[in-house]
Image (cartoon, rainbow, N blue to C red; front, side, top):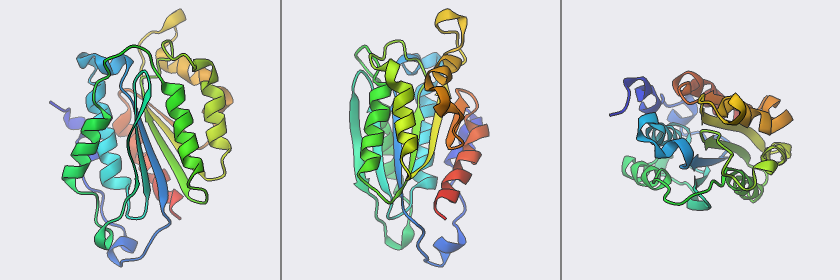
Length: 228
């Protein structure tokens, strides 16, 4: 059962004045990448539930008609679950049935070994480059465990490359684990260290595994600002 603490993420945000008046806002390219390896395989951590709630909230509250949506499922490889321009009549939100269908596929448990977090970020960057002139918002849900990622040495440069693009508005990394990793440091701290200078970029927003409801409002404000 989902924690009541996450319910605000699934409540529809109030319609903006521009939406009520039928005015258009600048479209965005929203990419949601979900890492279903590592902690997400352990039901006790409820990572899969958190990933599902986050992705559902993005599709319900942040996606607008005219936006491009890319959904990436990260396992030992990267699967493109969806990649299209969302269009709706009179600015309606995505239908509940579609949200549930997409997020169920996005958070399907991995069965193999290995992790492709860096490859997922690289694919998000490549796809973002294909919508030049459109603001990019990338959401990555991951526990941050890079040990099984064969390309982990390049995670910092990959994120830096994404941030160097003039259209990148935000990178929201959520779900980072406080559990001890190799060397005694937490998995979160090790991941942040691997990002290097990119972690200090003002467009990078980080949330721990149990901080989602506290940080999500800031993310929503960032997306709102990116449309101006």
